[in-house]
Image (tube, rainbow, N blue to C red):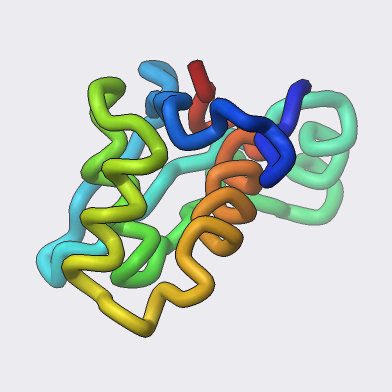
Amino acid sequence: MKRICKTDSQFLTKIPVRKSDVNWYKNKDSTVTIEMINSGVFNIFFQKFLKKPKISYIHLDEIGSFLWILMDGNRDIYSLGMALEDTFGENVSPLYERLITYLNTLKSCRFIDIK
């Protein structure tokens, strides 16, 4: 899985896309919850013997939820960053370092693809 990093000269033009098979919903407070299905041999074992859930719920904070909703497959990383900065100002500094880290986390969890 290729990660986006600061050394990638084209990283601002890449487009994060939510995967269509990821279930999510917007809560009353405008935050987003992502449903993560716990599958695989180890998860089945833990579900059966340790009563672990089949689905985990990932609750995004205000900034993460704002970004998740904007990732519609049309906006590139640069425009997402500008929207974050316009809305949250200094609360998202250092902007692109944090944004890239967050996008890489979502990608490693298989919630998004980056085109």
